[in-house]
Length: 612
Ligand code: FEO
Picture 1 (cartoon, rainbow, N blue to C red):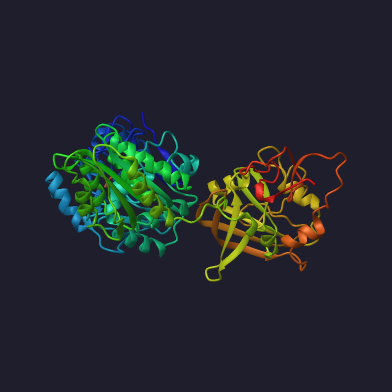
Picture 2 (cartoon, rainbow, N blue to C red; picture 1 turned 60 degrees about the vertical axis):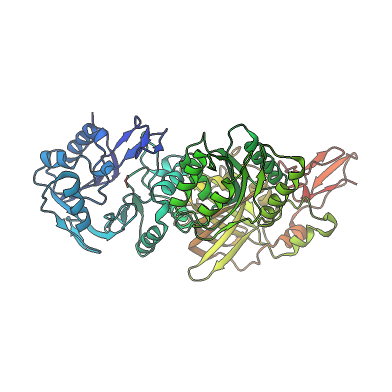
């Protein structure tokens, strides 16, 4: 039975999911399966974009026949000749003998290599177009993203980029088709990274060339050959591609990959991991003999630092580590700091050999000192591990909570002297509206007009923006009463509907509510980048709309404390504890835990003071 999905009114996904494949390309485990995407455009002419792997050919042909609904197939656009997208070409030609193949010259050569077919194809070059009636398709070459014949297609009518392997993801689609139908960041980003780094990670320069071409286009949808179609929050995946293709880490932290025969090398790796954690540095550990290399490669692309710990074996690097290092170098890892630990009971050589291999990579800073273990780590060597931990830690910013700082030097009141504004941040997810108070909205650039906002990760509005990529900021004015701050700041949208009693429905063009009263202006933002910093996410956004509502001055943080926030009332009975200077919440107890977060306004212990 056919199973197709509608992408637009005249574009249908006719691909197939494969959950029986154990190893993609014979190398990469795909526990969540994989989708082979193929798309059928039903214009005046019908156009099929690529085909599928032969393992799923039966369902594919059912899907194509159903979607065509008796029409003939006019064109097959071949963007990529790797057999997971082309293996059924010969079968397709038998079923649709009048179809015209559209491909570039390199693909035509490969057709002859794979099939020994002499095809009269329509050969296209850079920026050639195909008019199919309503749609105008433009072809752009994308060599080595992932093979030399790869090209992508831009449908300038519906602003859709058919991106071949670009923006693909491991994993079957499980009934969904759009990335916004799932929690992509939580459930699929790791597989998108593992797909990218292992399949096209080597070809960062070529991916950047494609991104540059794509940046000249107005793209509203991306249709890749694997994984979900992107129609919302395109910046989620594009921003990752910018980092991955330039070999920039996504996050600060240390990947510790080790090979250990009897646990002694692992022991040293674990102790180092503990030392790093004590310094507030994130670590993740992999036994290269257990975890597939594709997962460790993916982690190495994500994190900023790498520790390689390996025993010596047959006078060389331990076999599974040697394979991993080979893979890492082959995938062109760059811009990382690496520390090495070696082990050898009589002749430790692995460290020097690993160093020699990694030195071939660009911008790899290998720490000078290799910790060399003879059989097992000795107490005297703890200082060597501490030295490595210290050197790595020097690359990291101080922990955000300043627990090691001299608290007498920190007066949080100084922060309140900054001309922070106060804003109601609103978002919409599906039919759900929500809003919260934030105090950080900053213009970054004027052309293009961009702002940044910082939002507490625990806020419901934060999660909505992560999912939708859009928000409004309404700037509160000095007329705003405390009740506005109470309403939007002291409750969670998870518990109440903050707009339940709203009699008006003021929205900007993005469909999100704004606050028309007690505010002086509104800015709509479309997120282009996000940065996670401990408790907050910094959203960078293009301004899509902005307007002024009144000439009342903005309510600064200082004004809020001086004129809006009620002064503390004398306590009826003296309680022992701490009071939140922001919202007045009282924590009862002798000592306030350092990591305490106010359950009302979510500010930390630093914003509490003892009740005197
Ligand atoms: Fe899914 Fe490079 O092919």
